Length: 304
Image 1 (cartoon, rainbow, N blue to C red):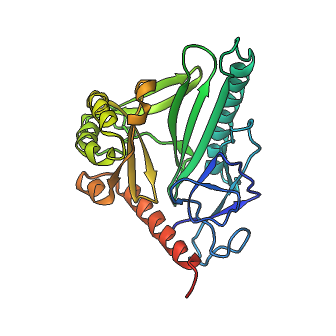
Image 2 (image 1 turned 90 degrees about the vertical axis):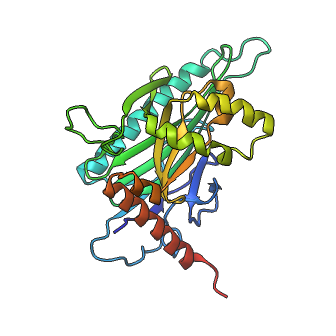
Image 3 (image 1 turned 180 degrees about the vertical axis):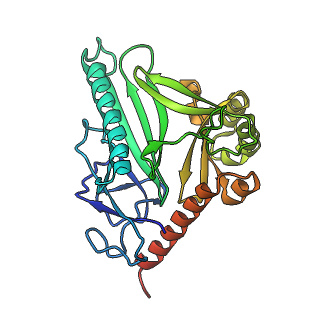
């Protein structure tokens, strides 16, 4: 059974994107938001979904700086796994805070642009087993050009630890990709002490490249042509679960800064996940979250 997710003390700034059902008046929506709120709105009692329902709420934390919201925290944190999640998120915010101070310490040079740092956060899944945030950062800290990256945060709520898509060679940790896939887990250093987990897998390449014509059709013809060359050479991917799109999002990572427009997410559908024998608990969590989202949407729809 999917946990009921409530927002408490939520005053997220305009950089915090909600994907799904929300009655938050200050939220900036990215596509359809994904905060699973009770049908009664903010502060209302959660819907009755059974005695085994775990009620979690997402709490805001003071912004790191203007344009840089802190990662949200899970509550109550009286269980060790939830406290582990919050510890990881706190450490990540501490690193961004220190890097931002270093970025802006020297100010602009001459008539050059002023250093800046923008950050947005999406909640894409909060299920019985998994919790997924997607963080997007863009900055300019002097030098020849700025930087931009997308970092998924995927936690196992039973342990409170970040999960790996690729299993260990000794099979002590099986990972979440199908067991017969070839995969390698690496970390890309995108900014000083900030790293993102990437997966190198020929099977992911084989799924993504044929779909690119379809998912990139909103790009101009010339840009799409240029991107095809970039995508054909892309080997490193990030993945995250997405309850709105009912699947796993797959996106190229570590592209050249000028080619960032080419990195378009592609959804691996539930049917695709089953065809390739992805971890059943992963599929079940996505399906349950997607179904719950539809239920809450229906409850919040105006009645005729």
